[in-house]
Amino acid sequence: MLASYRRRLLVQSVERPSGDTTTYAYTPVGRLESEQRTGQVWYYRNYGYNPDGSRAEVSRNDALNGSHWDIYLYEEASGRLQSVLDVWTGEVNQFVWHAEGTLARWWNSEPNSYARVFRYDEEGCLTEIERDYGNGNLQTAYEYGYDSDGAKEWKRDTLKQQEYRCVRRYGSNTNWGFK
Image (cartoon, rainbow, N blue to C red):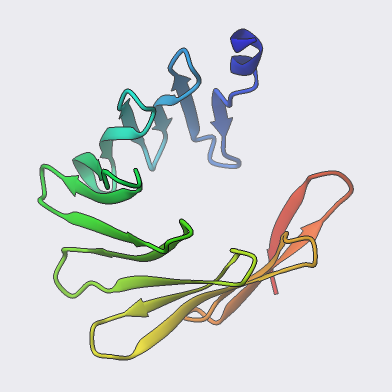
């Protein structure tokens, strides 16, 4: 059964027209072990896991952001991601969760950064991401809308004043476009 599972994993993608290629490698149980992209925006990432299957660390090196080593820490009681520490830069990303398991806030330790505040509808679908700069005012960054089946129908980038609509075709193919 495991062999048939592995055959369905993505092992390579090629972007057009650039021809940049990304290759993926997996552990024997199907977890992403590494990915490497060649071309103008090259990068390499190597992933490590805890015995329970949660991500333990990521070593990453790329043309835009340099080298980083991220360590993942989890809440003991819930097992939810609590923080990610970049050992080499000292940057810390922290996460707070709602009781039902949806992400409530995400912020990092960088100066002049902002917290991302996540809002959901009664079905648990993400409807809005706001930015909290700590001055008491929240700024909407993204809004999301869904159809009656819960499939994402649109995304609005309020900062860029752009809206993306989902165009569905027969089957499960989904395409996004500007409006």
